[in-house]
Amino acid sequence: MEQLKPSPPNNSPLTPLTFLERASTIYSDIPSIIYNDTVFTWSQTHNRCLQLASSITSLGIHRGNVVSVVAPNIPAMYELHFAVPFTGAILNNINTRLDARIISNILIHSESKLVFVDCSARDLVLQALSLFPSKQRKPPLIIIKDESFETIETNKNISSSSTVDFISTYEDLIQKGDPNFKWIYPDSEWDPMLLNYTSGTTSSPKGVVHSHRGTFIVTVDSLIEWTVPKQPILLWTLPMFHANGWSFPWGMAAVGGTNICVRKFDAEIVYSLIKKHHVTHMCGAPVVLNMLTNSPDNKPLQKTVKVLTAGAPPPAAVLFRTESLGFTVSHGYGLTETGGLVVCCTWKEKWNRLPATERARLKSRQGVRTVGMTVVDVVDPTGESVKRDGNSLGEVVLRGGCVMLGYLKDPEGTANCLKNGWFYTGDVGVMHEDGYLEIKDRSKDVIISGGENLSSVEVESVLYGHPAVNEAAVVARADEFWGETPCAFVSLKDSLKDLPTEKDIVEYCRKNLPHYMVPKTVVFKDELPKTSTGKIQKFVLRQIAKDMGPIRKSRM
Image (tube, rainbow, N blue to C red; front, side, top):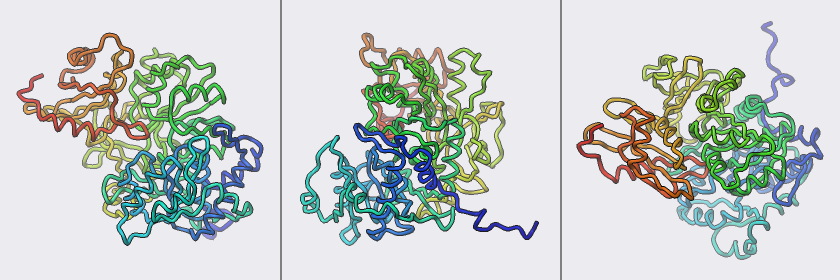
């Protein structure tokens, strides 16, 4: 058999871009995108993406260039997931809630050659470009207009208001493009396809590079793990700029799904769209679930909606409340560096016979590796696997085909996390006896109190069980006696008649936690600071706790 080698017939590069052409054949007249009164079919989406890719190429964009997008969940954002890589270029989605300085850093670091900008983010991007060094070339802009949102100024006003080269509007590019454009197939499945930034707070942000192969694997893997059927109806409650919507822009093309686009998450709008479009699937961080359950519109659903949640360990109390409304929640774990979810709490039929609270507790665990992931483990500082006892802490490590190629222009950062045959995640977890992983914290969020490693996630989970608590986050506060003790930040539910005091919260925790894990400090906030994807910004809270100074002569 030695003479049998890979050849063109059996060695075509894997890429999720092929899903769109297939969808246009099978699901040609099925709605692909619905946004307000706009409806496109899969054949129309296919043609629009080819036309757009044709026009992008005519602007001088070629293989290996970076094209950036600053836009919410609108049809253009979806189409660009195909149109940009159709040209051989690399897609770079940018978080719309970043400030101008960070966006400027990203555009410079990525050497972006073209930027698509939604009308709502136009001024933000113009400000970011104004921060470029004087000799730094500024990428030209394509403005995405949206009459349903806001009428923007004329092209003349935009171009004359700055030194930025304003080329065209999004729809004009599509109209000028060739629907018979032959899109550029990757030379290798290892060719870069995506560039996503995990952080832009310094002049050297982390740019995660993913290949066509890795994106194909995580896309198919996610469809299998979530058991997504053909022609689902997905409501985009997860920002597509967040790890490319966990790969589901390409996944929906693979199964001929309908993408319901919505500019901004609003619980009232979400419930309305679920009912209007018979939504079957949604994705979102635990904060999205919390907002849905605390909404005045949180009436039980007429039909079950499947929800995939990740991004932070979901409190069992939040899962319980969400499922009581008729949502079926699946819980997973992934990172920007994996392009989507690679660990899921795969459900066992026998668990359905357990009490609801116990089911919620089990579902709050991250779970087991997906079928496309090779190995998931928890290791100690020597690299040895920790005991599978649900208590022994270690760092979560991964190995599989959808792990990133590395960090752009950062060989040291790449080498620090891709080593010894593993991707070191920086997350702290335990492995249970049944082989299910549970994340306990980010390594930087572990609280060391009196020599004991204390999981802030466990304390937060208890706080979410308090009937008055809306949001909760726990960080370390310096303590002269213990070294560090838990400091809890909480926001309370609206319309409460009797507001709990700090003493009330502490007493509640004492009844439900070991004493060394009970917060010594409780800070009430109207709302906790969050990223656009719903993650609570603990670095902000850590700074507040630091500014409060150490607790003096503390005893437990």
